[in-house]
Amino acid sequence: MNPVSLEKKTAERRENEPPMSPAEFEAAIRAVGPERYHDLHPFHHLLHGGKLNRGQVQAWALNRFCYQSAVPRKDAALISRAYDRELRREWTHRILDHDGLPPDEPGGIERWLILTDGLGLDREYVISRRGALPATIFAVEAYVTFVREQPLTIAVASSLTELFAPKIHKERIAGMLENYDFIDDKVMAYFKRRLTQAPRDADFALQYILKNAKTRDEQEACVEAVRFKCNVLWVQLDALHHAYIDGHIPPGAFRPEADR
Image (cartoon, rainbow, N blue to C red; front, side, top):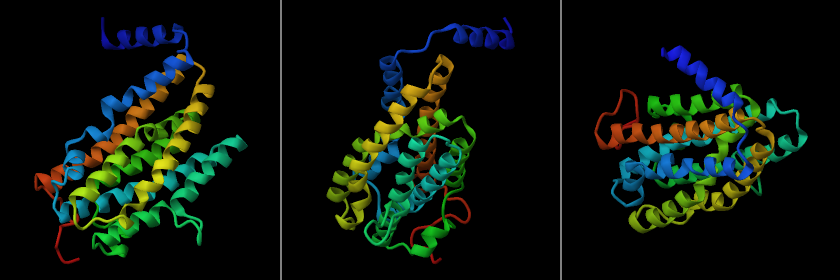
């Protein structure tokens, strides 16, 4: 059988399959984390295990800022497409969680900049993204594009890596405070706040897709969206490992201790 015929038969079979039950659907989403979440990545273990030097931690924080700063942009893109007032109201607080609502709420981006400040990085340089790895920029912009262009329920599903986030935040807080003398409580404030924000956000998004993904194809597309988001996170660590562990820093990217 040729590949086109096989693909057609597979699509026909899936069309005839009944939707997963809510419990089966949720289980399929949750199963993605143990298989693909970036807490499994070697760079993650080096970072949390105290195996990186200051310059390597700086490179991680600088590149991760690109992702953090993209989050409210992808959330704004999602809101712009939503006719559901409840969804817009709920999703709006995600933007404020990251961009802040001064003076009482500085926001996650400001907390991340406190981290990069504490690591000795120039704030304007971090915000400019000039020193970020090309793969980092490609990955985060692919995520923004995915949320802007995919059907709304699938776009919502892509956020569900938050189901797995509290575990990695706890590991990061404990591991980095224990293993690096240049890390203190103040610079870890971002992760501590996400311990309460991420579960709240994930619960809403999960209930939304359980309710709105009606067909088997929609459900499987939602699961694939979670895999896609895991890939977005994973490839960023791949790039960091290649550049700052293996020593292949691309032209123009951040070089620890280099004059900028």
